[in-house]
Amino acid sequence: MSQRRYQPARVSALRALGGGYHHLILEAPHLAAGEVGSFALLSVRAVDAAAVDPLLPRPFSFLSRDPGRGEVEIFFKEVGRGTREMARWTPGTRVQTLGPLGHGFRPPGRRRVVLLAGGVGMPPLLDLGTELARDHAVTCYYGGRSEADLHFLERFAAAGIELVTCTDDGSAGVSGTNVDAFRAWLGQGGGEGPAVYACGPTPMMRAAAELCEGAGLPLQFSLEANMACGIGICRGCAVARSEGEGYAMVCQDGPVFFAGEVRP
Image 1: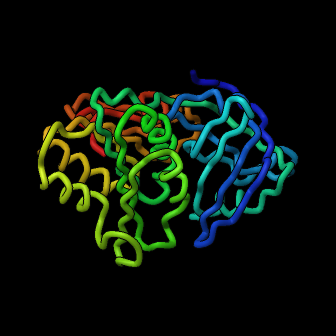
Image 2: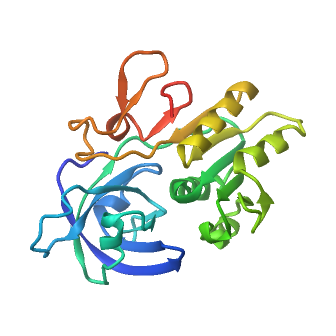
């Protein structure tokens, strides 16, 4: 259900989490109606701002969607000028939003599910896992460079998701990447393999695709990309199709793809 016109939303709350991460709650009933895995473009300029710079919006997936309250939660990290502008928003700030956009995750088709979440790629997988854990056995391998990159751990437990944390520097959980931790679990063998969902940095996605292809596991991944329009016109989020058949648009054809459709 893509919306092709900007609509206003209101900041309900914005909380700094440390390490440059932030938790944003938007009063936005139109976004809360999105499917799990969909996303929105947010103009980083407040509605009342006189300046036109920064011009381009930024894409964000949802940490959660609550149609009853008409709210969505967004988790983001300050990485540039746009997100620094967002970090200064206060409750009541009005912003322009476009969405919900894109196609979300498909049903797993298997009882056991594994989530591979890396850094700021965690939000759509927590949202997905919360839904699937109602009738599936769900394990999430959540990785970051250090303990400071891991957030909302209590929500995984509250949703009934088994959580395995992994850090590159060994400051929390398993030392190493989440894909390596999942590979070690696979090596124990036994039973039907899980359906796998992934979202995170490109190297992590490539490693996940290689591992799942070798193990014969179905994998869906949600890609992150810069874009200007969100509706397939600007071509800024083009990603090569795997079979050499041109390009797919992350905004319009994704952001969720089956492994084998495109090259992350």
